[in-house]
View (cartoon, rainbow, N blue to C red):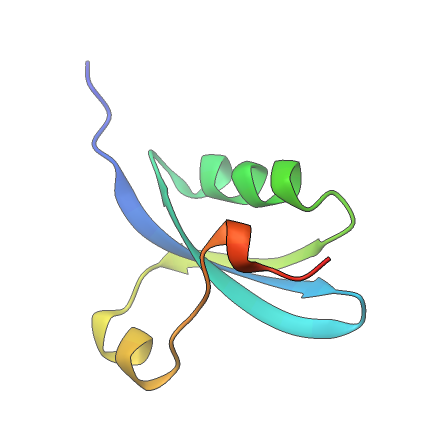
Length: 68
């Protein structure tokens, strides 16, 4: 069985600042782990499927664009 990749928004706290990124992953757990792998000190607050309308209002970063 082939898992379809989907866009997820991962909310996190990094250096006492809230932020969110969009990640392409097979499921929510994999999305959270990708962020945690890239930023080990981040605290993951939520993971949800990407909302197209909300993404236009509040654009997020890619993982590599995060500070720190």
